[in-house]
Image: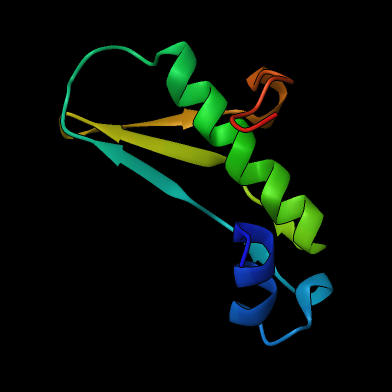
Length: 80
């Protein structure tokens, strides 16, 4: 099962009714990295593939929460 398939199952096969938000977490307090942005782009891509909307993804790193605006995400995603 892919992440997109799991999301469709999670939202009871009605993804167009949903807007999903994500909080990506890691223990290190370093600034937002390219890998963080690639993870966010991958999660957003899977959400769109599932047919659901995607809210701004946030990163929690070292106790700080930072929004990762969708316009700032790279086009490169993991697994592509």
